[in-house]
Length: 216
Length: 166
Image 1 (cartoon, chains in turn cyan, brown):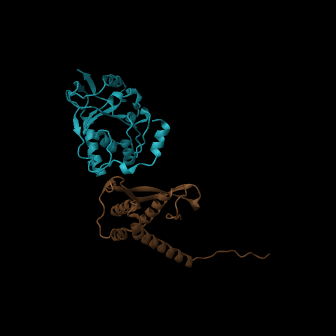
Image 2 (cartoon, each protein chain N blue to C red):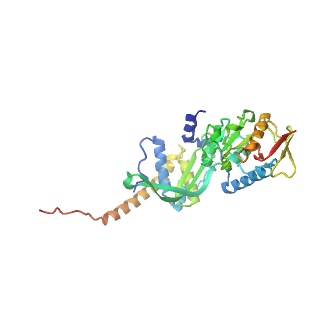
Image 3 (cartoon, rainbow over the protein chains, first blue to last red):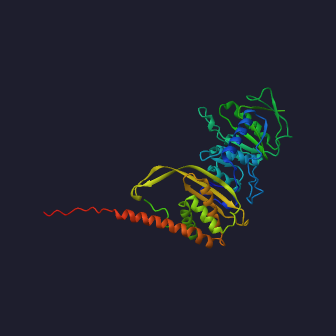
C-alpha cells in the first residue's frame, strides 16, 4: 500500500457492518491486559495468556482479524491516537478495528511506527528499519508484536539479563535465524533498542531490549 | 447561535442527510421520552438483540465556535459527551449499525438512541418508526423552539437613532 492509499484509508469511512468488536469492558480489560504485558516483559521468556478478554466473535457475525488474538488484545490496549502502527502484512479487518477502537494512525514506513505487528515472521524487515529511540529518549523506540507458529517446541535458546535470576529457556518456532543476529547487533546501542513480544493464539512472550540471547 | 437541526451540507447524499436529521432529533430527546416513544413505536415488542461495537462511554469534546458564525474558529469550552455504537444481530446479512453521541452522561439514553438509529435504517421498519418516533419528537422540539422564539420576540427592543436635524 503506498502513502496516498494509506492516507486515504486513515480518512475513509469505516465499514461498521463487519467491524470486529473490541473489549466488552474496555477500562478493566485494558488494565488486565496491560498488567499481563508488563509482567511478561519484566520476566523475559515467561509465557502469559491473554484469554477471556475479547468477546467470542463466533457468537456474532463479525469477521475476525487473521491476527493472533493476543496481538489484537495487545494492540487494543497499547495503541491510541499518538502511537502510529505499522502492519507488515495487509489486514483490512485488523486495520479497521484498530482505527475504530483506538484511533491509532496507520503508517506505511516501519521507522515511523511506535508499534508494529508482523503476521509473518519470515517477512520481517531488518531490525534497523524500526525506530530505535535516542539516547535521551529511548522510549521512542518501536515495540514489535511478532506472530510465531508456536512459543514452545522450537530450537532452544537461553536468555540472561535483568528480570531473570539465572537463566531462562525459550524455544519459539518460526523465527528466522537472522532475527537473533540482528537483535544482538543492537545490544551495544543500549539504552536504545527494540522490545519484542512473540504472540501465538492467546499466548504472549516478552523479550525486552536488555535480554541477552544465546543460541544453543 | 447555530441551528444544529438545520438541513445538512448539500454535498451529503439524501440517505445520510435523512439519517443526520433523525439523529439530531434523537440527540435532543430526554431519556424518559425516548424510552416511552420507542416502546410505543415497537408496540410492546422487546428491543432487538445487538452487540456493542463501542459500549456507552463518557468523555469530553472540545466545542468550537466562530464569532458571528463566520469569524475565526476558537475553542469555546469542553462539553461532556456520551457516545455509543452497536450492531443489531438481525438481519445477519446486512446488520445495521446504530450510532449515538449526546451531550451529558446518560449511558442508557445513548443506548436507546443508538438502537433507534439502527432500527430506522431497516427499510421495513423505517416508515412506521419514523412516523411514531421521530416525527412527534421533532414536532415537540420545533414547538418548544417556536415558543422560546416567541417569548424572546415579545421582549424585543428596537434601537434606532433619530437623525438630528441640522
